[in-house]
View 1: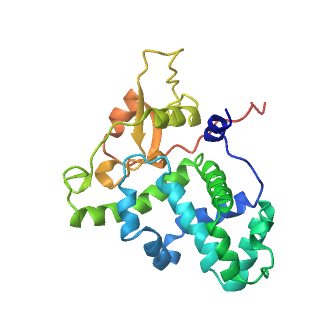
View 2 (view 1 turned 60 degrees about the horizontal axis):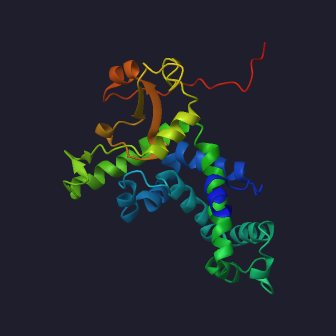
Length: 254
């Protein structure tokens, strides 16, 4: 039972997830200011990973991991060391750094080899992912950013099993992706707000739409999906539209 629970839950351990989400948000939102680092994070071999069809450790998970790793281990030595030191203490893994000074980035880095550290780090990535996953405007910017890398990669790697006419092929959307998107978007078309309810409105066909279309370099990734009704999906076709800025309130305010 424990393993099953762990696959459905992550622990909100409170180690600055909103701070780190804000950092990732800013890197994506101001990508021109971080162009060199963006190329390091998304270029070359990383671009090949962007082309994987619906990995559970999504493109956004991988990007968050790279940004966190840079913050912890590649930022100015003192700042990075303090961040990783505090993270290890907060995760109750102080035994991993017994005798290590707070500014010893090399000594602190050795803690990464421990499974307990890896579990805590993956949990932090998941926390940040679930904060950002609900912000579709951010997801659109993120996938617009990755689209350029995917298009460039396709030009030199025209694999018929992966690409068609320089873009990723459409693949079957896994059920776990459909369920996650349906749950996030609360059974409503993100464009017109029509209920696309599997029980209440069974005649309405749910469509799982690529926010950034495949024809424009979009990825087959859970971070690039939204729920649309059949009519809105047909109207959008391969065009790009801004995602809806509307979100459900937790309860009516009046």
